[in-house]
Image 1 (cartoon, rainbow, N blue to C red):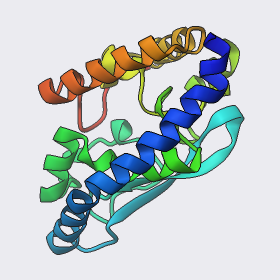
Image 2: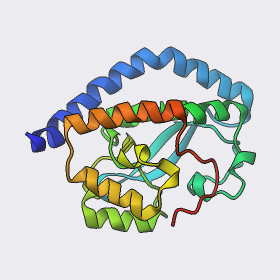
Image 3: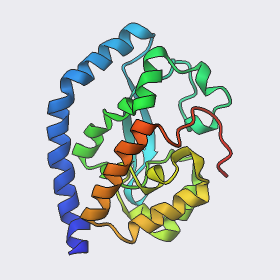
Length: 201
C-alpha cells in the first residue's frame, strides 16, 4: 500500500488539491500580485531553476519578495545582507510563506508535490550528493517537507539531507498529513526562519 501511495495516490491528491487551491486562492493571489507590482519595480513572479526528481531541472515560481537587483542564482541563506533586498510586501509574504503560493502551479504540473524535500538550486551540490546517496533524489520536491518542520533554516545541510532521506524511506499518507499540520503550526509560530546568511554547513 505504501508503494501505491508513493507512486500513484500521492500524485492524484497533489493534482486535485493543487487545482482546488489555485481556484480558491486566486482572489488572494491577485491581490498579492497587485501589491507586489505597486510596491516595487520588477516582475510579480520570481522564477529560478531548481533541481527536481532524479536531477531533472525545472523552473520554480514564487511571488517576488525581494528587489529586482537581488542576486538570483543563490539561496537566500547565503546572502550577507538579505534584509536589505526584501521589499515591504515581501516581509509579510515571507513571514507567512505566502510567497510560496505560485508553487501550486508547479504541483499541478507534476514538477513538485505538496510534501517532499525542498527543491534546491544546482549549486547546492553537497545536499544534492547526499540526497542521491540516500534516495531522496527519487522524490518530487515539495512545498514543505520533514526538514522544514524539524528546524528549517536552523538545521545543517547534512541534517537536511538526513531528514530528506528519512522521509524518502517512509512516504505515507499519515506522514504527509502530520507534516502538513506541523507546517501550519511552524508558519504560524514562524519557527526556524532566517532571512540571510546562516552557518548551515
